[in-house]
Length: 139
Image (tube, rainbow, N blue to C red):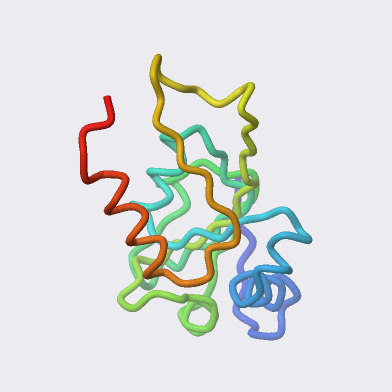
């Protein structure tokens, strides 16, 4: 599939991508998640997720043949600099549809250890919970 080329910072797709990156309410409203980086996208794909839109910047080293997506957008270096949220990015940003699980369809081991969190606001709290949960062998 041939990628659409985007070089304008005023392009509606670029403006929407910026909104999705900056506002969790926008991601929730559009039912999309944003992932930047080839490694991170590979992990998402290995977890069974599919890329909806892939934005890549060849002048940074990215190419459309690296990943499978429903839609491809080649972007200029200026556009990628506007939408990138990581330092030293490898030129990939993608939109994915989130996967939702319920307790009925969640793949679990025989004796699972489950932690359920809601609206964690401070990264330090999440870190403390994660360290505590991994502190001892729960199997």
